[in-house]
Length: 341
Image (cartoon, rainbow, N blue to C red):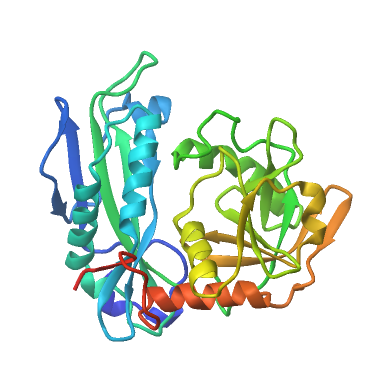
């Protein structure tokens, strides 16, 4: 599909094949130079490491067309660092941070006609990912890998504005205490799909997971970090060694402190105390912040005072400020914006 055929204002959050993607291969102990290609097909051995033992990881970030017409990305250095940490945990060769950022620049610039116009609500989503490619039959790491980035124009995660969603406390565990919850491994998301479908069948939008050891502390959902606002207007961030370090969450906490002069408290959050918070939200690249109106813990329903009609005032401030920075309406902290062209 040519980009000229897209109605930017009507895009949903789904895949649309763009023209170029970036590919680099790891063989004989080193990454090759990498290149842009128009070939969107991945051809693998039936015994490839990724297919046998799930050696795969990914990232997600966006490119934006700003109010003054520039094309930028948002904090790709943090995505690069997180992918390095994930690769190490999965015994995969890290793709160097500088090359990651350069690959992002190359693929966005090559697909600049696919970056939606400012004001349409649409953006260009980037998906960097890596996987084991050579045949592996014994349980061991692959020796060859491929790193790729594809892009796709996407519409806003929520059409017509973000309405508060409902969560249920899951009976399943998202990650073991010393497992892979803190890295962006594909296997974490595969394990969340069954509980997610179960939640949907019960009328909920998502699960919220508790710590596996005591099942008393909030961790995160299947695909997003959780934030709370207390009665004093402070931002409260659940703390755990198995929570993924979200780029959006880290950016929102900085926004709360530096732009909104709000106190940020990172600590363990007990499920028993969420009734005392006034707002709740899920944060991630796709939606920035998804407001939460209620959480159901089996027979107990917790309704947040912010309600089920719209974002709470603090959550709205956070959303407006961060998207203002991303779109060039507000001045960004140093190093947050990577200008492409």
